[in-house]
Amino acid sequence: MSMDPSVLRVDDLHRWLGEDEGRVHVLKGLTFSVERSNVYGIVGPSGCGKSTLLYLLGLLDRPDQGEIWIEGHPMAYGSDEDRTRARNALIGFVFQFHFLLPEFTALENVMLPMQKLGKLSQPEMEDYAQGLLAEVGLGAKSHRMARHLSGGEQQRVAIARSLANDPAVLLTDEPTGNLDVKNSDLVFDLLCKLAHERGQAVLMVTHNNDLAGRCDRLLSLRDGAFAD
Amino acid sequence: MMMSLMGIIFGIGFFVLAQAQTSGFESFFKRTILGVNGSIRITDRLQETLSSIMASSDEQSGVSFVISAREGKQYVEGVDYPDQLREALEDFPEVTGVSEVLEGRIDVTSGFRAQPARVYGIRLKDHIRVSNLDDHLIDGQLSNFERDVNSVLIGSLLARRLEAKVGDYVVIRTGQEDRRYQIAGVYETGIEDVDKQRIYMQLGEARSLLYKPFGGAFLQVNIANPDKAPHLAAHMERLFGHHVVSWQEREQVWLEVFRALKVSSAITVSTIILISGLGMFNTLAMMVMEKNRDIAILRSMGFTRRDIAEIFIFQGGIILALGTALGSLCGVLATYGISKIPLHIRGVFSTDRFVVEWSWEHYLYAALIASIVIFLASIIPARRAARLEPGSIIRGTSL
Image 1: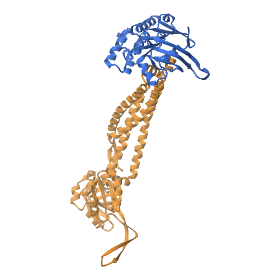
Image 2 (image 1 turned 30 degrees about the vertical axis):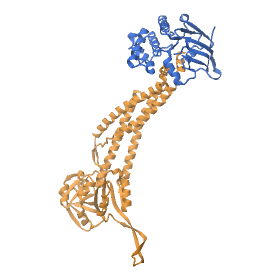
Image 3 (image 1 turned 45 degrees about the horizontal axis):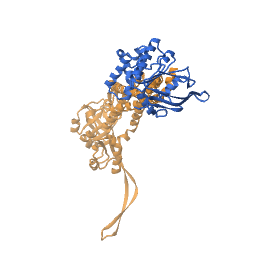
Image 4 (image 1 turned 90 degrees about the horizontal axis):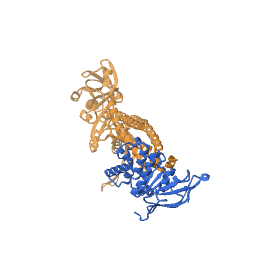
C-alpha cells in the first residue's frame, strides 16, 4: 500500500462531451485529492459535471486531459485490462439505482466482485458476503432474491456489494436519490460508519443539502470547476 | 430462447432422421446390388493384333531380334482363360471370391406360357462367395440345385409369369435345341430386372446348352472393401487388358440419385437448424439490448470484456449442449419409430419396411452444423455486448 495519505488524486482533469457544435467542456481542469476515512460530498446544480467526474474517477470513462491516481497508480490512460482490474480491486460503486442483478440473491450479488477477484475460496466468499450483509443490517435476508427486497434494502445490498473487495475508495452517485427520508438517513449513516470504521474514502454525489452538510468535506462543483 | 432451443432440437432430430433414411435406402441398395452382381465384373477385351518378323543377323551365334508391327485390334468376347485369370486374381489380397459366369439369351416355357430370359451358368460354391444367392432363395433347396445338373434356380417374377413353382419343369429354348429342367429353387433379389429374367444353372450345363464349350464367360469378383472397387478395377484393367467394371461405375445412375437425395434432404433439414440459429441470434441480440445495464454493472465491478462475451457464448453453449443431446435423442426415437413403418418396395431392392441406417456420423454432422450455426448466432451478440461502454450506459440510466 502507498504511504501517500491521499487514496485518490486528480490533476488538471478535463472532459468534453458531445461532438462538433454540440461539444461541451464539462470538466475544466479539476485538481483535488481524497483521503481515507473521509466522506466527501460533491454538490452542484444539474449538468455541472458531478456524474461525469464520478465516472472518470471510477474509470468508467476516460478524460480528455489530466491524470487520475488511485493508490499512487496513474489510471487515466491505462489499458482496458488495467482499468478493469483496478475497478474490481480498488473501487466500489453505489449508483442512484441499486443495479442489482434481479435473478440473483442478495448474497450472490455481493459475492460477484469477489468471484471476479478470485482471492477467496467459495466458503470464504460466502462468509465474508454474509458478514457484509449483516453489517448493512440484512444478514437475515441474504438468501432473498434481489427483486424481492424493498428499495432501501436493495440499496443497502448495493453498498455491501461495493465493499466486497474492500476497495480503497467508494464512489456513490446519489445513493439516496431514490429513497425516502428514513432510508436516506439509514444509507448515509451506513456510508459514514463504513468510511470511519473501515478506513475507506467515500465520494458521494448528492442533491440533498442536509446530507451534504453532514459530509466530512464538501466539493462544490459549478460549470465544470470547483467553486471556492 | 426456449423457441430457439426447440428449433435446434427438432433441427437435429430431423437431420438425423433424414440422413438415417436416405442412407438406409442407399446402403440397402448397395448391399442388394453387391449381393447380386458383386463388386467387380471382368468381361471382354480388345486384343491388339501383331505381326512379327524374326530377323537373324548371325545364325551361328543364335543372336536374333523381333520386329513387331501393329495391324489393329480384335474384339474377344468374355474371358477366354478364366482359370489363369482366377489364379492371378487370387494374388490380390483384397479379393475374397471369384465366380466364372456364362450368360446367354434363351426362351423359357412352362406348360403354356413362354418368356424371354437369360441363363447364367455358375459354379454354386464359387458364386455364393460373390453373391447372396443363398439368402435370396425364398423357396426350394440349393443342395438340390447343386446335385442335379438338370435343375435351375429362377427369379420370383419369372416364376410368377410362368406360373411355375419348385418341382415343376420348364423347357429352355436356345434356337438350336430345347432342354427340360426342373426348378430346384426360386429366389428374390428385389431387383426387377434380375427377378424377371435370370435363370441360374450349372456352368457345365450352360456351356453345353449355349454351345460355348470354352471362353465367353465373365468373372464376378468380390472384394473385402467395396469402396475400393474403382481403384482396384482400374488396376486390374491395366494388368489384364480386359474390360473391368466396378459396381460404382455399373450403378452410377442410381448412386447419383441417392447422393442427390441425401444432399437435398441435408440442405432442407439444415435450413431448420439455420432458422433456429437466426431465432437464437435475434434472442441474444435482444438480450444484449435488454441486459446492457447489467452488462455495464458487471463491467463496473471489474468484469472484463471477455467475461461479458463469455456469458453470451456460454448461453449459446448451453443451447448447443441441450439441443444436441435432446435432438439426438429425438433422432434416435424417430429413426427407431420410422424403421417400424411397413413399406413394401420391389424393383431396385426388396423390403417390407422402412429402411434406416444407424450411424454415429449422422449425429456428428448434425452436431457440427448446429455448432457452427449456434457459434455464429452467439458470437455476434457476444462481441456487441463486450464492446458496450459502461460509463455511457450508466450515465444514460442515471439521467
